[in-house]
Image (cartoon, rainbow, N blue to C red; front, side):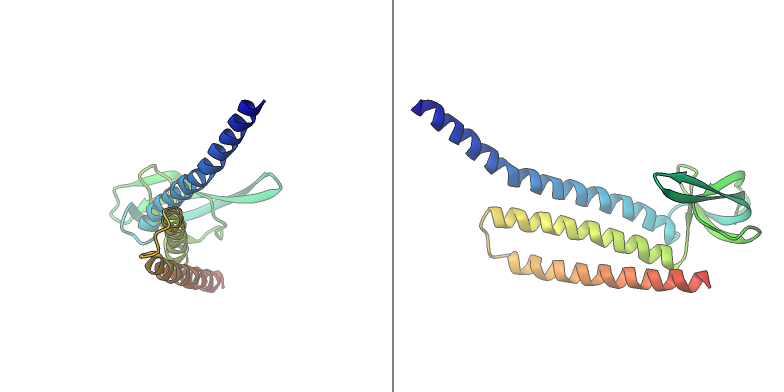
Length: 180
């Protein structure tokens, strides 16, 4: 009986030792995924990537999924240089029918809105991904019981959180200003 008890306690100790490693791996995975996704969209929102053009909004519809309603506006997209015309362009945003809005066409032929609200919104999400990555680095340092760079990581974390909140605020204000 004594051998079995020792084996069970060793298994429990091994599982509890692996749990922090799973949390750290999860932080790095989520941080990397969120940062990659947001930086990709940020490149389109700022005009660094994609094809710039305008969408003439002809109609909008709404779909319902899981108790939420989602807008889909359709129209003709024309690139600024005239090389791309998409008569079946669709963007998942609520836009006024009859308006013409500036968009970027992405590599997968979807469309992204441009402007301050989109730019600062994606920037805030990019910074959130970096915050999660820094938390992962702090967890690694705490697990290694290293105190020499914990202050630097704490300062970096504070700066990233402040920048993220500022960016989200500016994006929200810009989005509200554009809706009026």
